[in-house]
Picture 1 (cartoon, rainbow, N blue to C red):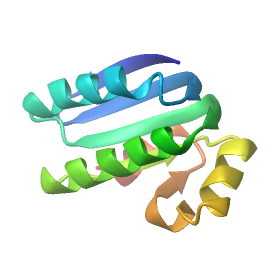
Picture 2: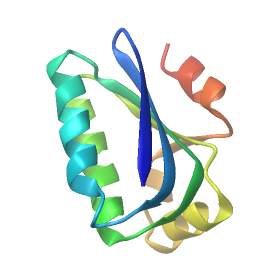
Picture 3: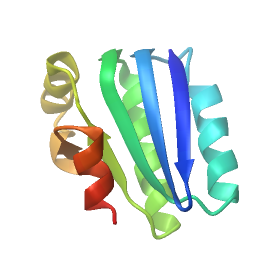
Picture 4: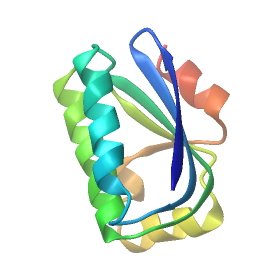
Length: 111
């Protein structure tokens, strides 16, 4: 997994490429915590190039959402590929996240 962060005041857009698996979540969590320490509390996850999320990856998305809410922020998923949508549906987590068609829509929804 490769993550590119694009920070804007209290919002960060995370472009995630590859898979979100147990091997990847610790560096992702650390990077998110660093941003939260800088008062960034809204997060957009661009999943347009994310092919797969395992259970640890899903756990991390839930953690991010919970931590963001404690900071009075929100999380949006953007450009989810069909595989990711199916994983969210099968695990009954699709209702826990707001999914937007693209990053621009997700960013607008947080302003």
